[in-house]
Structure formats: structure tokens, C-alpha cells
Image (cartoon, rainbow, N blue to C red; front, side, top):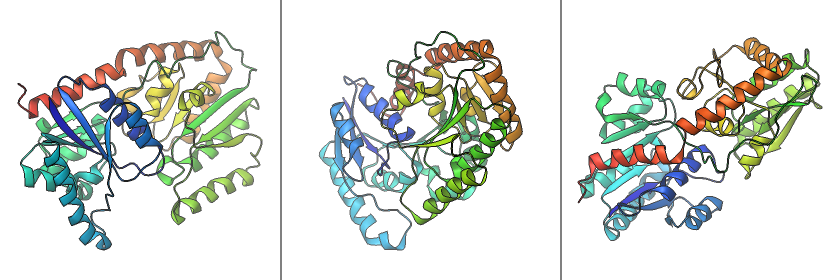
Length: 366
């Protein structure tokens, strides 16, 4: 059995990245691999891992490059190395590029391979900052995410593209068999309230759709991190709703711990930043409208399971929403196709098999 040390960037909110790590570690072939996860603090996510019988330790992982962390990060490396020695760790998997410097220091001390997940699009500066060149394998969640790594000089042979997965038994369609163009239609956006997720653009989409369809409501699912920058952005989003007089059209739903239920409450997902929510919505039989960023093109089949549109195409996105509202048969067809696509491509089993194959190329199996 090969013990693997996982480093998680979990803070206070369980997001898509955390769910992907939970799916992986809970479903590994336990006759071959023994997962041990390190999280920076206790919380609901640690409880979920432990309930899934995944060994989990809590250890502070201070931001590597901050001056205030110069001493504490060195002590953290020592503690992580001691933990790795205690469990005879044979491989390290950094669940976020942010944690690569820690993984790399353990690699140097113990001479063991390192895998790094790359969930976001990195700039050339970030590729260097996160020490990607020293990773033995990099797992990008999209072909688009692979390109900046290759452009930074990393061999494509070291990079695997593995799209996110979803629990198909939890995320599944509701019982609605038909609908009319006058039914209430709910459009959602999911994720932390922050500039990258573009909730302000979502409000502009709501404004345009509302001018044509009065039976459409918009749900903002997620909360903002507790920082001044994020609070300012959330206030700007709320101000936009007031400015456009959309208080009865757009609703803040807050952070949801019951994401399968939250998805079934939607009729359509709009994502302006990609992510695992695409797989979750499709698994629930919901069409997805996404922009051409990140994993969107890897997950949405344009015109069949949803639509892929240019990043700033607010008007085009609004038009597609209106089209789906006014064409319920087409809407239902796309939703049914989305579920079938999710079953074929986004299962946990397929996801775990692909990552286990990466592990097996790095660690000599008995």
C-alpha cells in the first residue's frame, strides 16, 4: 500500500476544489493507496473527510511568500516532513498550486515525487511563483489551463488534463417532465462573491433578460470571503441590483451546504468562470451557459448540453437565456442531453482511475 500525503488549501468555505479532493481521497483503491490529508484548520470540511474514513491532520499552512511567514513556513516544512516520515509517505499531492512550495521542500528532503493540481489559469509569473517546474506531474483541469504551463517551458509530458467530476448519485435530475414558457424560470450563478466570478456581469445579464421576460428570477449562490476587498465587491453587486431596481428579480441565496438541492432549484446555470459547478449542473439535468474560459470548453458541448460564448458577450448570454425560456422543448432536450453527458464523462470512478494511473507512473507498485 502506498501512503500519499495531500495538502489542502481549505479555509472556511467548502468549494469545488475541496469537493474534488474529497471525491478522490474517499474513493481511491484502498488496497493500493492510503490517503492522508493535511488541512490548515478544523471545520466542516475536515469533518467530512473524517466521516469518509480519510485520515486527516490539521496543521497551519501559512502563505509561503509573505514576509510574516518566513519563520513559520520553515517550521511548517519541518512538521510536514516529520509527518511524512511517520507515515512513510511515498508521494505528495498538492491540491492547489498555492501549496507547491511546501510540497517541493518535502520532496527535496525525502526524495519522493510530487503531483500538483492546477485548478486555475496561471500567468507566467505564477507558474514560476508556484514552482511548477519542480513538480513531477501537473494535473490541469482544462486544456486551456495546460497552455500557460507549456508556454512557460514545462514539458507537455509532465502535464495531464483531468476534468472535474461529480457525485452522480447526489447530483441528479428532479422529477419535472415538462414545462411551459410561462413557468417561473430560475437562473443561477454559483461561487464565492468576488471579481473573478463576475457577479456584477450576472446582474447586467439579469437586467437585460428582465426587459424581455418577467417570469425569470436570478439566484446568486455563494458568499464573499471576509476581507475588505471582497466586502467592497459584494457591496458593489448589491448596489447594482438597487440601481437597476431588480430587488424582486435577483436574490442572494448565501453559501449553501446542500448543493445538490440548490442545483435542482435552478433551471439554468450561468458560469462566467468555469469550475466543477458545470458538472454538478449537468448531472442535475440543467443546461449550462458558460464563457470561453478555463474548463468550460472541456465540459460543455456547445449547442447540445449548453452554450459556450465569448467572455464579455453579455448580450449574447442574455439572448440565449431568453431563447431557453421561450422554447421549453429545446430547454428540456438540452437538459436531458446534459445528464447523459455527465454520466459518460464526469463520474467519480473515471476521475479516480485517471489520477490513480498518474500515481502508478510515479511510484513503483509491488
